[in-house]
Image (cartoon, rainbow, N blue to C red; front, top):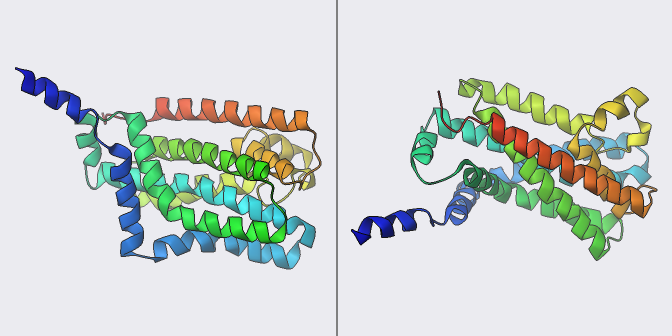
Length: 254
């Protein structure tokens, strides 16, 4: 009689995150291009900004590229989760197992963070070569990266449960995540936007991540109290976004 109990306990203590980390690593090891593409996409923006924008904006754009790369992980999570649900039918297995949808979120998010990590590191090295970055600024930057990683992974997961065909992944993912990346002032100061656009941007969590990081790096004139407010708004908006995304996510197909 003790055996079922022991097995039941063991089934609930599986190493979910290491297993998903292996999936992310195997993706890179089988195809190196997976790690190169996340570097190229933000560098396309950086290249044109280097040509047309004032040079003093370039460090700000590089910091924004780090946040944009992180935000774009949500598109990969969306793609993977859709493929797992529709093509592989793996989600049915996960639902039948003791795995919860929150642990599934962190697993899929981690497996997609690993291929994106080289791009983030390259951009961080470029940023450090352009301006001096204090330890405190690094903490703020990677804290913002962590928050956006969780938030947009949750958004990607929620959207994945609403699409009915893998054919929808490419247009829906590009529309949502690229649009959010452009509307948020990641590559440029929010002050150069028209007032109406600024009002729209302030409804997006990535805006507060950008403002916080720009302030920490000294790329934007701001006071400590304003930075605290930006951090609070980032955390609150991200928490609300994750809760809503998890409520919208259909863990069990109907």
